[in-house]
Image (cartoon, rainbow, N blue to C red):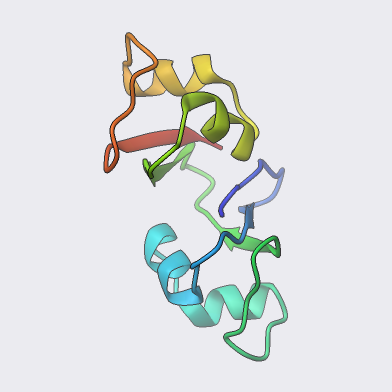
Length: 109
């Protein structure tokens, strides 16, 4: 995924990860599957890892929520979302680089 990167418009660019589905992405970003399909000119529900999808966001939102997965590090998450480790730590009030699987992080976009 995910890997949203910032955009000057009201969407983020999300890089599809292994095991992602339109349903899981829509649920994560609280948008409908049809909205994602329309914004990306998709005619089927088929998506592939590495594919970049535009995901709409509210202009008032300045972060997304991300659930830490096995082998994630602050660095890998920051790189994936085009931000910095320090930005993630500040937004989440983290005092160390320690992450645990299942931890919910706010990621600035």
